[in-house]
Length: 150
View 1 (tube, rainbow, N blue to C red):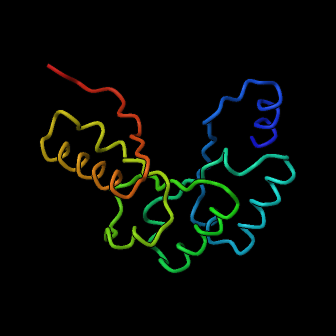
View 2: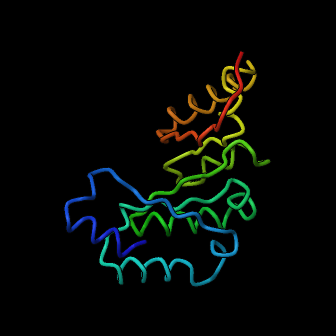
């Protein structure tokens, strides 16, 4: 995928503000050479990190808070953005999130599917968005799929 970004940039297809999201598994995130591998891939492809955001789940982030905060800072040092995927489904305390250099919160689709159907769900989503605005974090809502309505 990374070489294609350079092709798109050079051909004029790539638009300002576009990003490619890369989902990172727990195994990848905790590999010793992960940051060097990312740096090498960017260098090999000839692109800047600012057109990529790395997605990790909330559960991965809180598995080892100190390590995760340091690892995320290393990702940010490469110029990449960091997205916290499936937000709201993990068992973390919100106090952890102040230590993570997160740019994007992706609200889990389970919440989005219930918007307008359950008052509590709507209130939770509104609270997440309000928190993100205060913390200057972009919010993305994962697709809700089909909904049955009357």
